[in-house]
Length: 211
Picture (cartoon, rainbow, N blue to C red):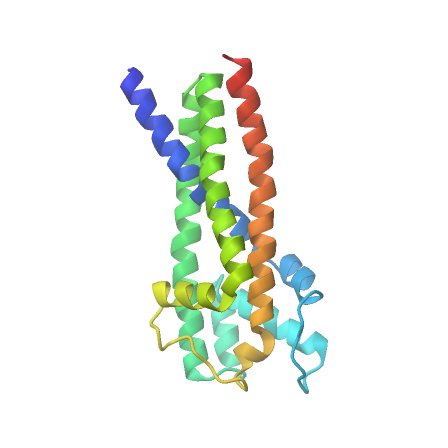
């Protein structure tokens, strides 16, 4: 029985940073976050007015979250075939990632509550939080040193290396400049960090008070 509980705690701890990261990323894929971010992005000069660029950015958001959004994206006439293909690739990646979260998160909560031991539950939150902190610090440090490398490495890992490179005049780069992704990464990482700190603090309290 003890070995079974240890195994459950191990898997819960390992899954914690993955699920929390996906949860925060999902919150970032909302109109509210895009509007918040767009006010803080250094947009390159462009003939399009700000409100139009923002509305197209939201269209891109909808395209990677639903089939109807993708159809609207394709029929807009604003994007070329390569841009459409890339957004379809992004949609598939997000569908898998968010689908994983929607399925595993309830199972994770069930497993967490099934521990029925405050000390064990606290250690899952605390040590799972440590794993996430290492990941977030890595992302923040690399972003500060060389964000272009991080951006390129991420895209080459999940997409065809030649499918996501666009020209400056392509619509995706006009509405999503590099500064958009840089600041999106920073705000998401910081959001994950502070959410994690709250849960990790709760974990520490459960762990130590039940000692």
